[in-house]
Image (cartoon, rainbow, N blue to C red; front, top):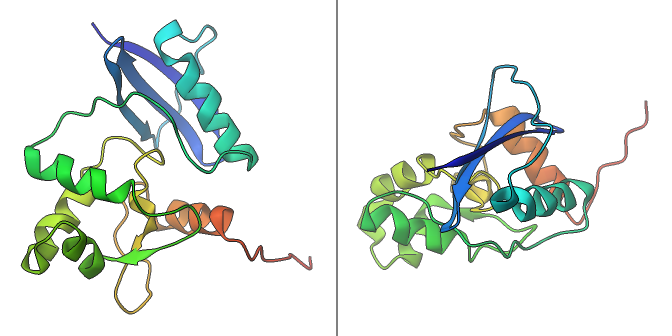
Length: 158
């Protein structure tokens, strides 16, 4: 049985699912959902850590993760967790990090199927030419997350 919570983030409503074995998914929604009044105990730490991330006080997550995926997808998702906060890598570098430079398309596909938004930082993977490419949550969210993590904050004049 999965526990479920909806939380408000600066980028919209996030849906979190998990159980006593760990967090199974965190996805950003493009629809409106009612924010959960009482967070299930199994998801309290996840909500707490995500809030800290958005407040700018958390750079690494320490959660029990339990995503569903193939062995290859899990290998890619593990590699994504090694990308430091505030840094980016290319899809080519990602495929090299899993030991198969020819698996760039497969690695990109696994990246796109990441079920744990932000916690497994797929937003930190960009095109080899530095462009923001493909992001299931929308490129505007990817841009926001990378700016949020940037050590060089852009100042707004107006």
